[in-house]
Length: 232
Image 1 (tube, helix red, strand yellow):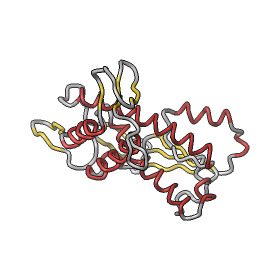
Image 2 (cartoon, helix red, strand yellow; image 1 turned 90 degrees about the vertical axis):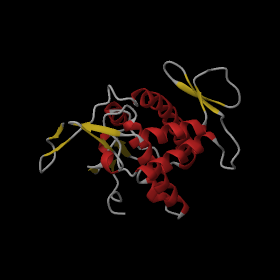
Image 3 (cartoon, helix red, strand yellow; image 1 turned 135 degrees about the vertical axis):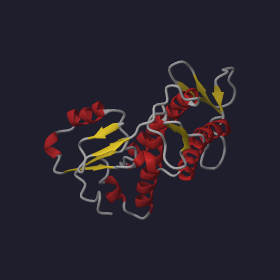
Image 4 (cartoon, rainbow, N blue to C red; image 1 turned 45 degrees about the horizontal axis):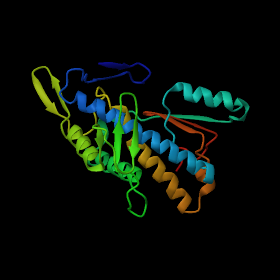
């Protein structure tokens, strides 16, 4: 059980450990796979920023990334700081929406906008992974359909043992499984990027740019010099 002493009123939450869970090996592989997709989205977002000046990737890997930003940018330019916390992120994500968002991200990464294949496989090695356009002799390779089925199986088979009773989780994702942070990150990214793209399409590019110094670590959000955040 995890204590949230920073909350007022004081709260506690249960965290399900998965060290001996039957889906742990699947979750470990999905962690590698989703990391490759996340890195690919970061590269794509960097290209978007270089052409449009809009940052649509708010995800932080760790607190050091935020500190590096403060080192590379003068603190005197920071006029306002807003922080937010998604208090029930893991336990309220609907499974259907989670699957839909992940499928869209996977398809976007593997196919061009016109529907033609960009990559055929995602290949994993010991420490990393990469995309392959056509052929590979590597045994640990995954297609779009295979990855979607792996994710669906994991999400549909989340079970928690409490005492002598087995509960199947029908909403939310377990905080104890390996790929849970990536599932949450990519789920929120899909809405964040869509939000910014819709601002641009509606002619509000300046408003979209006001979110450039917005950062999110899982369910904690920090936004600098942005009076729009929380008021839209």
